[in-house]
Image (cartoon, rainbow, N blue to C red; front, side, top):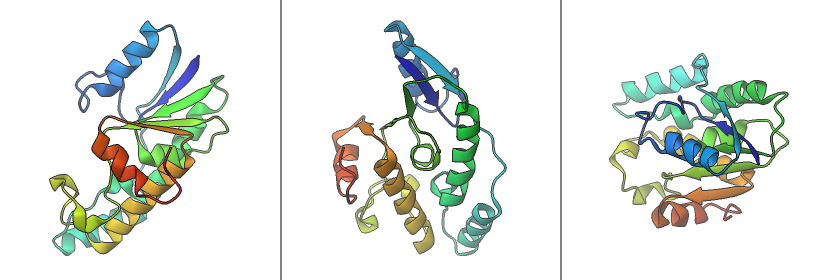
Length: 172
């Protein structure tokens, strides 16, 4: 199978995040697949992302710019340009923004070990805590769009899969 492996970071860097993208890439190669690495993707941070991050800081809140729709559109367009002309069967990504905003005619497969709580009041993750209302809205929107546009979703934990099932019309 010919797979476009689209990531924001450098998949070749085993120290990036948990190392999961690197090990997944290596396993795809070991199984005989062709894996075209698309990334790291670099984009200029959109004005609205910077604005909402600034507003959040002024409010004493956190802002998850990697899950906002403005950054998502910028990253999706960059991924779309990088994918243009590649002969692949499927697009694989670990990012909700890339799954939701990349304009591509091939099926997208989303794998992830994280989720954003559909009901924010039930949030259990400290890195998702103390968000402003608009940050929660953007995170939910991007998560829902990524789940909706993905042809298949794979989750590293039962908790992440159960959380994804709470989003309307997204269970895969």
